[in-house]
View 1 (cartoon, rainbow, N blue to C red):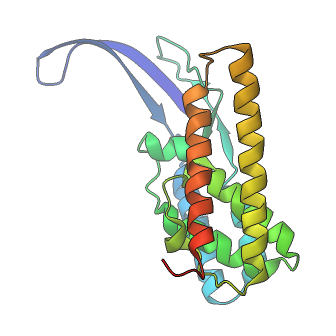
View 2 (spheres, rainbow, N blue to C red):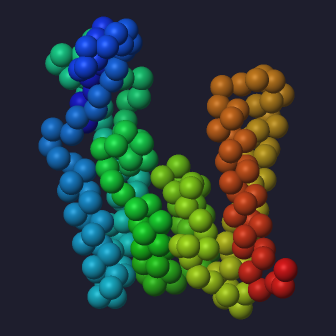
View 3 (cartoon, helix red, strand yellow):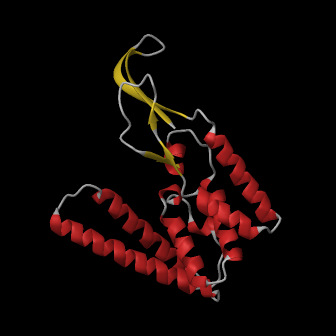
Length: 204
C-alpha cells in the first residue's frame, strides 16, 4: 500500500480548508484480489470443500500489507502495516464482515476434528478487530448439547482472565496508560460474548 499526506489550503470547491489530509493507494489492486479469493472460498464452502477454504481464509484474515510512502507525500505513515480492518476503515475494501466470519467459522468446524482447537480458532476470530462488531448469533449456530459450546465458553473465560490480569498489571504501573481504552473494549467485548454463549439452552 502507498501512503500520501499533504496540506490542503482550499478544497475542490474553493472553500478555505486549512488542514492536512491523507490518502492510501493500492497500486497493485491487492484488495480486488482479496475480494475475489474470499468469494472463491465461499463458493468452495457451498461445494463442501471446507478444508481448502478454511486454510485460505485462516491466512487471509491475518494478512498485513506493508505501507510505503508515496513519492509525493509530505509525511510518513505512523502505521507500518495495513490490516484488512484498517483497509475497510479507510474505504479501500468493501467487505461484509459477518459473511466472512460465518464462512470462516463454518469451514473451521468442518475441517478441524479437535473441538478445543476449533474453539481456539473461533475465539481468536471473535477477538480480531476485523470482526469485533459482528454479532455472535448471526455467525454461529450452536446448541447446548454441542461439545464445542463448552470449549468456546472455557476459552472465552480463559481469555477474559488473561485480559483482566494484564489490565490490572498495567494499571499498577501507570493509572492512565496508552492503550487503556482498547483493553477495556476487549474486556467488554469478551463479556458480551460470554453472556451470549451462557444464554444458549437456558430459558430467559
